[in-house]
Image 1: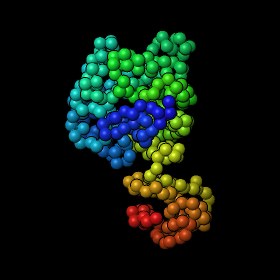
Image 2 (image 1 turned 90 degrees about the vertical axis):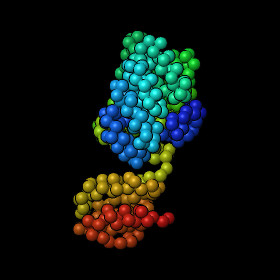
Image 3 (image 1 turned 120 degrees about the horizontal axis):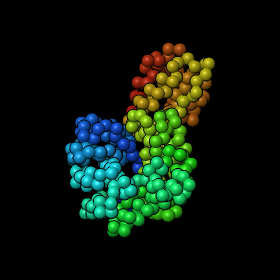
Image 4 (image 1 turned 90 degrees about the horizontal axis):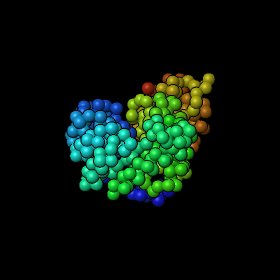
Length: 351
């Protein structure tokens, strides 16, 4: 199934599947029972562009904290549960908009059914999550190791368990840290089920390696019309996940809005700290909702020409810089005012 033909699932006030816009997700790294820190992080992620947030619920205290957290955030909350079915039930009772479980580690069918019954009563969607690292021993042995086919088999088994209990308000997630295995698994499962797919490369790594693996994996999957919601999993600040996810979707033409930054790679002509400047610009524009291209160039010699394809740009010189619009120099400013002048231009942007 392509994303245009997957089922429509409501998560709080957000909708995924059925050709709806791809939602960006992240996960808090605070202790969930630390309500103040968790709320602060969720609201920062929301401001950055996160659509749906997931919180770990490893204890009953964490489950109970969801009530207060929900009062102070504006996006849907997914409770991430492992092993203890009672935590899944408590999370739903305390306001979770969706729960993430692996029925394989919840326990007996009675325990799974107890979770399903509460979800059904409250019409709360369940994300069925299967990772390559947690495949059942018999599936691994049958396939001669961890394979894409095994991941799909395990996920569909879990889906059928829940369906047989009379519930189909489901989202499916199959993840692997092996990029090409993950891509193949998504290609296979999209032919077998019509539930929305949450896509990500699990345990992808640090900012650099994680971004490369996620960009390749998500790019290959999403560009085939597969995937309804995504997370870029990075070992670092969750805010980086949102920035990366937005850029991946924008690059693939799957999301509009937000400023695109282009910058030159630096060379011997560079007369300004371009690396620092480009990073400052990227951070500065994060809260500005314009669908334009901003160029950051390292010298006043080639800057205006190189920035012609951008809507607006800056080029650095010795202790000064240029503001350039559509290839035309509109003003020269001291170096320490480049960022503030650029921001002023953007906040007063007129087409």
